[in-house]
Amino acid sequence: MTQPSRGRRVVILGATSAIAEAAARLWARESAHLVLVGRNAERLGAIADDLRIRGAAAVDVVVLDLAAADAGGELDSMATLIGSIDVVLLAYGVLGDQAAAEQDPAAARSVLETDFLSAAAWCLAAANYLASRRAGVLIVIGSVAGDRGRMSNYIYGAAKGGLGILAQGIAHRLAPTGARAVLIKPGFVDTPMTAGIARKGILWSRPEVIAAVIKRAAERGGPIVYAPWWWRFIMLMIRLAPARIFHRTKL
Image (cartoon, rainbow, N blue to C red; front, side, top):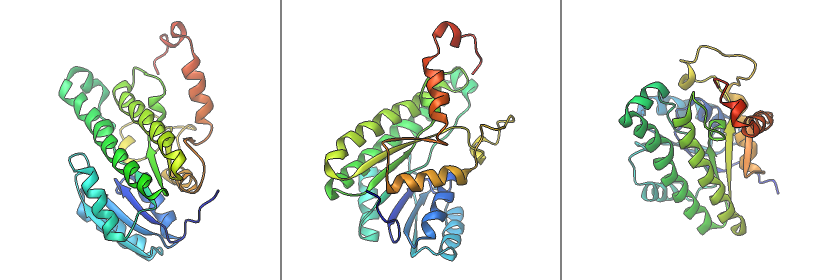
């Protein structure tokens, strides 16, 4: 059943990301109470001011290193701050440098710890909170990179793949309670994180497109949503390609 989004209380983990900011603008139009969480206080403040102008009922800023924080304790504090939480959006992560990470275990570990281990802690904290309320939704931004290991980004893909399995398990766990978890799998998105990738074309989307998918997912659907939808079929073909053929590509 569709849940009304007007006046919802939304915690955005990694609120300075382009996709997260675009999603926050959609919720602001419907008078949501937003909690913006991230490390960059100045940038968070600027986003908060913009969201208030756009109609947000209230905007709170929490300056926090998400990769190093006590997820359970901090999420409880945010719930106390705004009364309760209807939506948790996990939107932070790093792309990393695949070539560097292949040669430097510390670089690879940094990507894995940020994109999987710390993200998993926040997902589990959110799951516990939502299960106790028997309501609400956790939205996790994964990636199509987690569908099959490819030479171009398999370390990032491994982290996102693990996070995706976790999110699906949480969705299964929450289903009897009335709460939900939804894994969003974007394809290529033109954001500051992907600015170093020179080749962009028809498969690339804008953050606003992914944000619209996220907002719909907060209201209904799941547990897995590709963004845009046609990535489901692209990745199906990639997953089903026999290794003897797949290994000849440079994907």
